[in-house]
Image 1 (cartoon, rainbow, N blue to C red):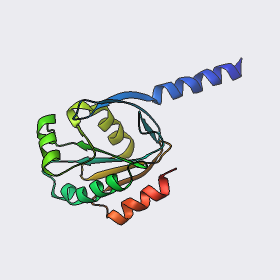
Image 2 (image 1 turned 135 degrees about the vertical axis):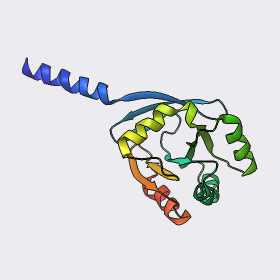
Image 3 (image 1 turned 30 degrees about the horizontal axis):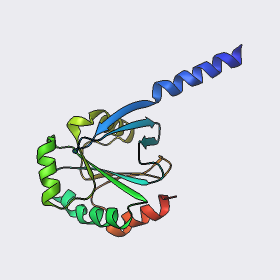
Image 4 (image 1 turned 180 degrees about the horizontal axis):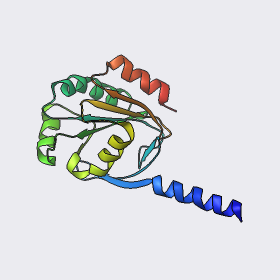
Length: 165
């Protein structure tokens, strides 16, 4: 009986900490997200390294990292998926205009449409809002890196090689 109670408590603990969420990109595609502890699994990203980039349209440092993200997304389409979340409270149209103007070839999101995901990351990483902020998720869905500030292209490429399958 004691083993059954312990097992039920363990299952309840897992269920309470797992978060099932959705996020809709600026093109209208919705992705299911399952987050628990140090894992963030995003539907359609299985087997790929995910760069979850928090950025702002008015952030100079964010614009500095953009060419590297564009280049790496193009170079590693089968190993990498860049998902950029605009966190300065802009809606879809300004983000898509910015995306077109800057030749962004990766997926973008508005914080308005994926607030639960942003809150989950913030709560579990002690992220206080500084941007750019990078979350590197390995090909198995485990968060490997949390980094504030501009990251060099060489370091980003190293993450791809290290965390890809």
